[in-house]
Image (tube, rainbow, N blue to C red; front, side, top):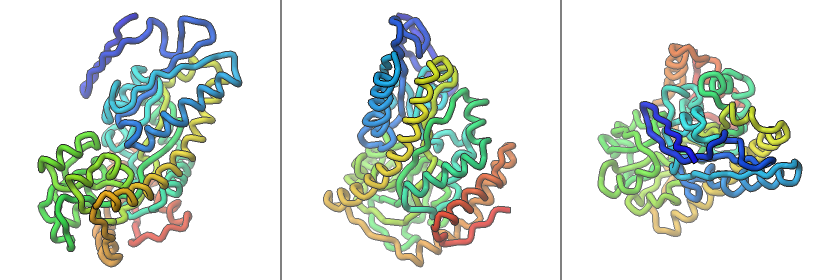
Length: 361
């Protein structure tokens, strides 16, 4: 055994690994891969589907269709890399495969957050992820950036279900949220501008204690996680604002060197199972959204829907947000106008009715 040490300005990882390559082995026809996430399997749908579907399905197919056996070292819940460290962990090879929210890479993956930049989009996770996939198809720059700058290949897209707002105290008008500290992942925090709330960047693992101790008093959060992370206990007031599901917010990637070192047939299996995961995990998000809302009600949370007129007023207040983000991306030498315009157009083609006419110059 040897000790591998990986350091960046953002994190330090010490990990014991075998003294051969990540995809190598001490026995012929045996492959070992490390797979990890910052969020825990169980509460986080994308991580749960990795554990329950992707890993066992790849193992089954490799065993049945090749002369190899494949083993996964599974590291969910930040045991190797936390939510803001997974991109770098895959880049360095500390993880062979990683899944992570692009929301925690606001600089490196700025434009990959395109669906966050156009709020009040599709409420159905399958629809949102299908639209995101089409945007990736139309704009190869998104995948190329992952390969060329971060040495990893895209296997699948996932995301989050419909975003709403949970708070420790009830509120009836948007004015009630003025100066209230509300947490979010980062790129969704501008959604709060209209309300006058104080945005606080945070992560799901920090949420319960922070709500309980008053670090902040609300969370922009989708039902599946709001219930599974038990945020309803310190913050029982859940308002259905319908900011929309965010397709493509989660990406599943594999280190390019790790992938290239695998037998061609195993590479094919991993890519095919990745695409199956994309479809199944999208449906799992919809299922988790429905069960999350049901379980919140059963747990005694106070659930109400924001009146449609107020939702539209909120959306109108953010009408210039997509164009602003497109200009920001352009200034970073990224195709911001093209990607964000495509996203708006593809959502419209999918049948979604926007509450406001977003335009990007």
